[in-house]
Image 1 (cartoon, rainbow, N blue to C red):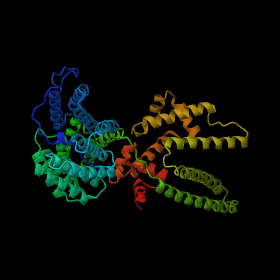
Image 2 (image 1 turned 90 degrees about the vertical axis):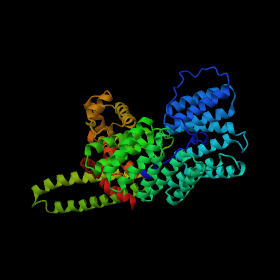
Image 3 (image 1 turned 60 degrees about the vertical axis):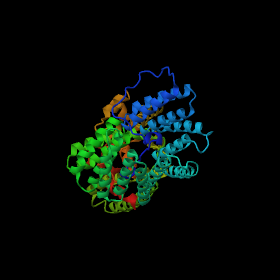
Image 4 (image 1 turned 180 degrees about the vertical axis):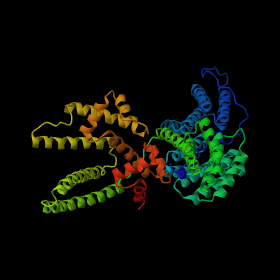
Length: 556
């Protein structure tokens, strides 16, 4: 994920964002099943407790109190309290990157507000949180539209309300976040500055802190690093023990990232270490993922290779965990890859034509250079066969690329079919059985599917130290049988087979926008290659270009 796409502030609903919490922590009740003499008093109690633990970053306690609040509200038919509790739980699932669950909660809360008129506080509270949710899930245009409509509704139906400016600040902050994601940096900075002015007006320390953080992130993306550090420092100066630890992590992250861009890794390191600890304690998955990636850059700048490698592994795990929570997947564009392969095919076809003429030359001088002809012919036929096979394979890949949604598993199934067809033609011509395998076609098909399912689901190729015996053992197959199936079905040995997956993974990562500033070495590590040397050698052998050359070709 690109650092430009990192800072998204999921602003709390006004009823939670703008109330100062007390110091300390209350104990969480052991049971939800309590008898409440005055239900409204209990609603107030657990509302205040949920605000308090949210501001300190204790999300699990926040979830617990919100569930209690929801139980009380439903039992006593308190609609406003039920809406608030559902919004709370949606915020919890959003903060923990469980977006599908969060959306379900938001929509349930929104359904309860449908019968309310436009002057209802609960109605605009739910809409404000939905706008922030759209930002969190990458629907920036929808977030802007929702917030602009909400601004109009607030200005018309909530004039004179003491919460008007607070809600407007939330709306402008969300619009600024959307603009930041869309790389409209000046527009984003304008929105965030307006939020800061509003926050100073109604003296909300929480909103002031978040506005300084947003402003500092805009400056960082505008490469105004001194201003970024200055505004993030202002945010840190206002943070107390009652504020969310997430804000502290975000402010320190921006300062650390700015020092990286200023080529001052020694200043960045202690800040980013603090961010890593906070993110781990607060279960801030998105921040945790991003800080691991930036620590890789710091350690590489300081020539601490082992530390960089450990952070890269941690980043890969955090990113995988984060991506598993997303409700939608972005598809990879393959059009440029298709053009590149077409060019390689044309070049190899010309090489084959040239070799045919070269063959005639050798035959003409065959009587004089008999010994040389034998040696040259062996080399020639081997090279000619290899080039022809590669050309056929590349041509097949070109056809497969026309379908952007086709997975590597499906491509390998298609390859197996072509291998079997070629084998049948050869066997028919020579009228003998293939000596490649003793397995029946049904057995080959069974083992092939078993291998492909395992490769797709478990992704063993991402392990730098994986061995053929490891996979064979997991599949309850002998090493000999495993090797035999690879050769019979795909005409590949183990190294060729595993590297096919690694190169496919590396190509996907190189094309992803969030890896635009990602170093080639880190991409190789994430794709499963044990070293930069092996990554470059294998990638060029299968693609025809080094990883760097391939990346540059996509930018043309």
